[in-house]
Image (cartoon, rainbow, N blue to C red; front, side, top):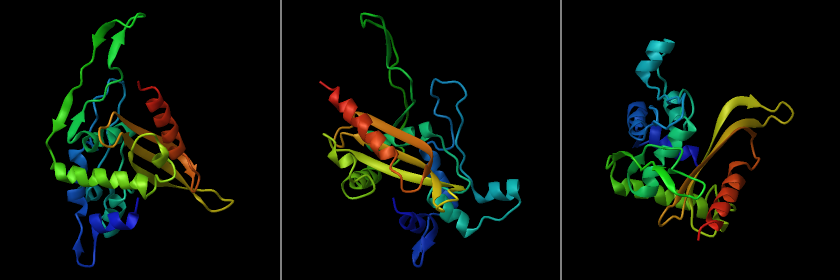
Length: 228
């Protein structure tokens, strides 16, 4: 989780040309960050991907380079829901497919007889090259072995991959000046043949406090302890 790296990719630096806001928006849209997932729950909201035209029309202001750098690290005017983020990480775990999320796999009776099944529905596939997905997947594995998830998910009984994140929300603790953050982790395991993808989101955590990582570790330890 390195802001400087994403600043370079999104906004550019020296001789490196950045993607720019339109390309960033295009790629995030491919992964569904601006539309409802269709989960079978009432009241789902869709995310929002800003661009220069929107800012000019709605806010009456120009799009500045700083807006692009903010967008590059997932801050600024961007909005996204936890379920959108979870669904968008599926292609890295399953080689390129986005599924419609569902609350239940099946309905069973008291004797575990299946009364009704809800089979998987593929919403999109083959929309981005698999070699690109593999690069991100390898980076997520390195976040566990050498990055922000080291010390937590590297001690699981299976190999895991993860992406951690935190977003400043403009709130500080007046006593020590530390920021409050919205904290995230998306993880899947086992790395070679994923069975579970997990997203943990915790709001308003004081900077420096461990939150999503110990929760994710506990959930994954429990999950794999139940496997026969």
